[in-house]
Length: 308
Image 1: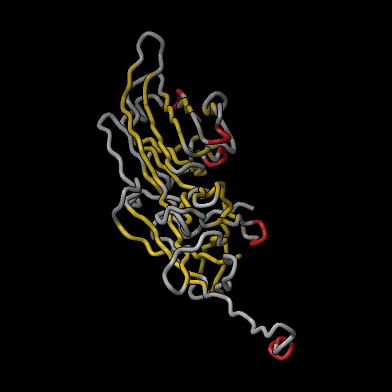
Image 2: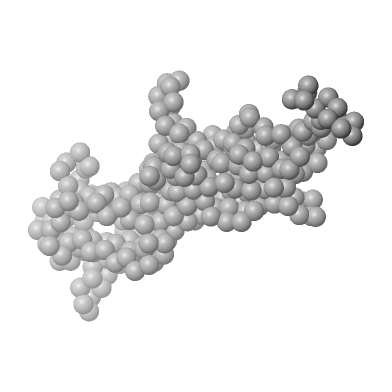
């Protein structure tokens, strides 16, 4: 099961009108792959006979049952929902939407709401998306689509990004160790009580992986492996992308490099502002493995049985 990450930011606000403004509830606009993010579009009903809202999306897929359209306030009953769609009012075009590429949503506002009673009132659209990429691009255009007199009333766009964290595996002498394997997880809490543990599902090769989703089953999680290389800047490191900065992710070692003991202490990611990451944050974590002790040998059995 892929789970929504409850500790993640859940609302990104996007506004549009003849004077376009935009804001985000979370100022850093950082998200994680495999989580749901909520959007709000706001505009004002113009004096027109036809009004269309077109939303395009990259790096995420629409949660189609989440769309609601309101007049004035979200405290009122929605005029359109995807649970009870007014004919020809909500149209989804999801070519390639399975991987979050070029998905789009078109909402045609019913003519009943384009008259003197509603002109100038706020029009609000809320919906959520499921993040599938390390960057989410989203653009909205509000216009009169009437043939021969197409008028654009406003547009706006929103960009969200993910962050990456790098584990460095070392020995007691500080030398990096390739071939170590880990599983990554985060937990949700109510007070001090753990309410859920979610493990990363990822794709990639030793040294570099990207999250594709989350599961509450540890045995379904992906083992990510530190790189083995003569290049000391690469050896013993593994980077996991698709995370949200400032969330506590834990690395659990599942396999130690040959000749070293397994470290039973899970380590959490430390987030630092700066670096070249688009999100403006980078995560780092390290773990030490100890060399396995050698049994004494006398050429025969010696003290082996006693030691065991």
